[in-house]
Image (tube, rainbow, N blue to C red; front, side, top):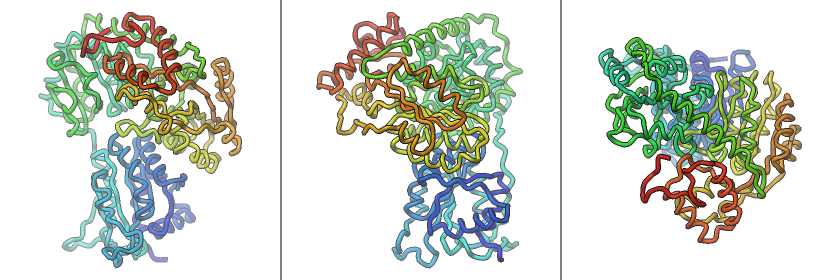
Length: 612
């Protein structure tokens, strides 16, 4: 049997270190899929994971890249399947992940003739991908696939390779030593980029001069935890993590105050309001209103993405480089700070904040279980090797406020794209990446209906491959797209509108049981502990159907005048859940037990954000 273009591509992909791909078949990619099957029968293939939709393929490839540091690979057919990849590829683009998408296309002779399923795929993917190329000749194949992988790794972005159907089955041809033929390298380029020594010296001088130093640490600092902690020890710095950097710094570091902003803590906000030096490490934190004011703090940013340097805060020094390599060069230049009062004050304030979060989790509501309580109770039970995912709805608030990832744990979600669809695809991808570790998916009922319920079918299909089959899916069941409902109230002053916000209630525990999994219903706070204990004791798949209050407010650490006024406006417009919102918000505000909450909804100085 002759070697085809698809055979060569598969071999090159395997030689890039890829052992798993996420794909969905179709006739437009049929030749390539056939070659994957041939390689599998010969014992020389890759693990082919077929979820229930192409969008999930791309989200899982992105999650695979996040959890493993490898290039994620997704495969789809021509036009309809290719289009479905876009959301997941934008997730990779916005969160700086290397993903290679391989998509089919109609045959070469049909292009330009308006044939069925023909579309300009290069134009379609041009915005999302750092490299898009169609293979039109066999000798071109290895150069295109090698360039796609190399470019995705270096630019931390998705790349797309388009293969017309007839090209997929053409006889392979090696590039020759002649004009137009390129003989490409498979060797990956190093990303251990380090700025010049004189620039690193400038950074050291700024940090050594600072009296109140704060580090903002993002996912781009993953792998450099030890260096970040040593730099914090020397400079007496406090640490704030971006949401996707949550697992970079262990939660038990006393001066790590978790996140800042709407999903963050008050100690983190205080760090930003009071620091005189800010070091941003591998983060493109998107909310400048929560960063220091102009002229307040000297700023340094370290990032491998040069276009993201200096875009959120007027940094004094921008260092293009890998966080670990840069800190390795920086550490010998830092002086030990003798006065650690700044760091100690941060640690003391953090202890108080944790008490406040415990108070929020202890509240009871007449309209359902407390979603904070169940998240906090899950956090208390997380095993040392747990992997946690969340969607981008209110579960992200509870994840930020109550989940504390200790050393060895992992956690992630869709960051800048903030798609609520990602929680379940991420969880399943984590099970494939680490089949010996337990995975916990925290997801709202809206997101669960979108891409969660069907992915339980994928779990049923593949769970036999996982030595540790424990997967716990916590569904926050409140019959409401609650994050959007609260955004309507707090951002636009509009009441919750049932026409767009109500989620049809179904028996999620019963659905799990239909698939042969364990389903557990939680209908009150009194049932939370026993339900979680049962789920954690189950070695298989468990769906926790938690009936929680839709009116529990995702209170930011700092309530602005705009937040308060817009919420009041929405209630004056007859919000259908007005009484529940008022009652449950009042409970939450009183539970904070601090002077910063005054009145039913605290108002700060006119037009100002308060610092307390």
